[in-house]
Length: 252
Image (cartoon, rainbow, N blue to C red; front, side, top):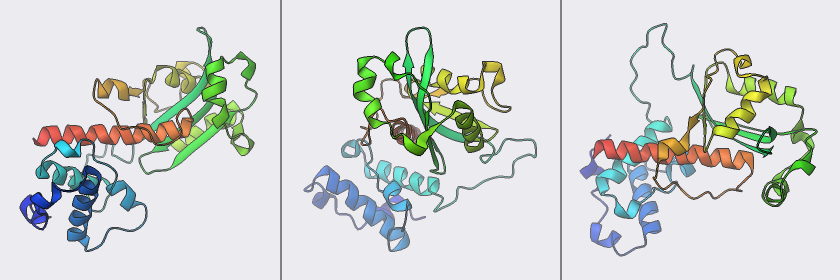
């Protein structure tokens, strides 16, 4: 890969100051990727590589270069160097990272799952709604903000079916992430009964994006809020934004 000076040499700084931040971001990214491959990668890679960079107006060319280089690596366009792992070690393919969200009815004593959405690192998604939920128990906020987004039809499934499908989707060594995860985690775990009844290889805890983020500003959600799958997909995007922030901080 060329160094920063070579990659940025055809971008005139004074000219870039005269265009908007949004145009600046897209122009810098397009010129960088076109220099690498003479054309933007086709298919699903393009929108991932060209997604907004948080706070680009306050970043240096080196920081932008580092973030985009990291995106290339994460998109597997340039594989990251890997050293052989011991046979007993857990590899990347063994630990499957999953972001999820739930919608539920709770009364201060019980948490009743209504819907659940998940997205894996490879982009595969899962969504289901629980059959037989007593919606009359829900408060007005749920009726106004959550229930209008429920899809019904083939999405409606029994708790047992959802539990089996999630087990297949997540695999034996998942790493779960959610945003303000406490109730979501309980709602997911109770599909399998007690905490000690969780599937073999599953962790007994969930990682929380809010704890990771602290007071950091997260990207605005562009999908449908309070739809479990849309919220899970946003959580994945927010996690990537935090990873970019941390990588830039370490490099700086």
